[in-house]
Length: 78
Length: 78
Length: 147
Length: 147
Image (cartoon, rainbow over all chains, first blue to last red; front, side, top):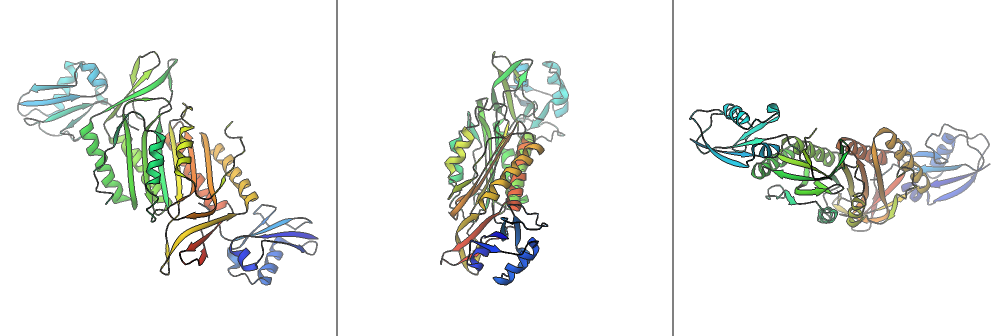
């Protein structure tokens, strides 16, 4: 199934991408996707990276076709 | 001895005066002066009136020649 | 240095919004500041026995008030690591919807600026001899008491 | 009504002081307001390894950020008896000394306005996906992390 991934801030810089569409196995969890992309792009400080699935920080979900998964570095608003 | 008394807000309204100079007995306390003026002008809500002696709210003092005593109603700044 | 300058707190009539913009703009050269906290008091059209307040006329025991404002400033600068603080309060008539108090504190960090601003507001309400005559639309009045 | 209007939070570049004066002036017809609380975030010239920050370039996951801003607003209006609330945050480059955040809350009473303003600031810092690139004078950069 197809998943859209977005990268922000330092993660866009590290991956060299703002967005990509990936074909992943059905039933993949957000946590699994996180581990895989962290490895692919050798992203440091894994624990500081949050995922949002369809703009929601609750990522204890199984991914579905067409989901938008955002890789978010620490927030710096204000 | 001579004492300058100032009245503010509703107390100026009630007494009909902003300022007066009184001749009082030597050794009079601020509390005694308060009681006397409250009676003279029939000022209600005595407990809401604060005195400042020479711009100081600490009034446990014996008055001296030339002191400035202010009769202050409740504060309403802000 | 900002701390020691003698400050005039009282202004005649309402505080115009442009004064606030000007104060903010004056701080853009101070690049050690990360946070500003501002409090504004505005005159409410409170209703008492069916009559609405149209304005408050402020008066003060001015010499003592300026002394107390100064003491509050000194205490605030010793309690809080603020870079600067400004206070303006109206005297005379201020109409409903207009501003009568402007407190402005700045610091490197947000919590300090916010706590200092709140401290100023509470201290001013409690300790400064300012008096307010609430004037109703029919020209009658009553005297305001801080809660 | 103010509560339900859809609000644009993001502005391009720095927030000018005049915008703050304008927002304040817009509230002078609301005579049920007695207190405004304002928080402003300003870019600090922090030094890192002897190099000073010259600007922060803000970016955001905009769709999610607008959703989270809306959720924070809804929560604030249910927690605090405020009459209105306004938030503006910069995107793009904001130089040191310039303003990047403007939070403005109003209420009949001071404590409510102040508490609501602080709530907004803390919630925005913690929950909104906004990212900041600190750009040094020599054009190198590092990524800002909220504390």
